Length: 288
Image 1 (cartoon, rainbow, N blue to C red):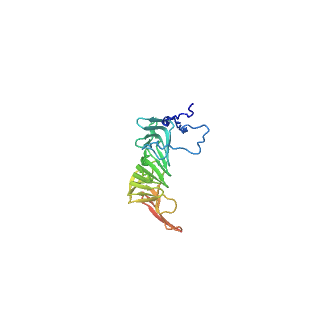
Image 2: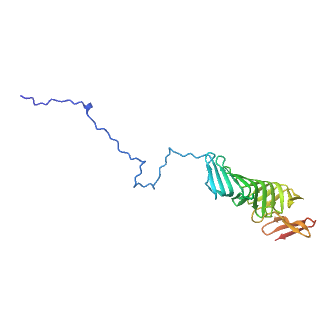
Image 3: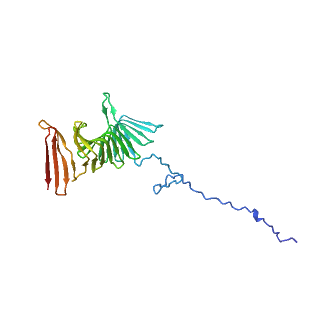
């Protein structure tokens, strides 16, 4: 008889082939689809942070020149020629020639000479309502300080001529070898000469000992100090005189004096005149 029982075959389960797992495809975020909307947000790469240079300024500088602009890459210098203009924050500077040292952050502005040897195009700086005319100006962008040579500036009704001027970051002015006058000429007829002065913007011009000069000649008139207000509205202070020439009285100063503000409805004005031939006068004018 045939054996109807099938033999049992043992299988080695360790050799059974199992399906190999396949990783799901990952989208490449570096490739933008033409139909992708990128306006909903941006991704910032935190691994790359651009380095900021040490000499980077906190505001842009706009500059131009009528003739030419030269960049010296090895020296890190800019040269501007011909009606150069530079704007930085509230500063507006114009001059015939300028050069900027990127390493020190100092901008130097100077005048030039024409074919006849006459100077022209001197630096003019406007900053916060203050205006300075000079022969040479150096401005530090880092400290926001300036040094100005042979400058002429106007404060209220008066003019200050200084051999050297230092401008602080808060716009306070320190002058050396100064002359204060109300004459608007480049060479004033008269001035009070003082070695040192300090100008507090929109408040006061403060001077140490000063000597009156007429036509460049010192006079015996000295004052121990002077305070000239440059604010708007009522304020006590010195009233600068006016230079005059009178055939009968000689060279003189008129309407110089002192104003005293005593309140909203009352003040006192004292004025005096003095002449080279010896005559003088004093007046007091109260106002209520």
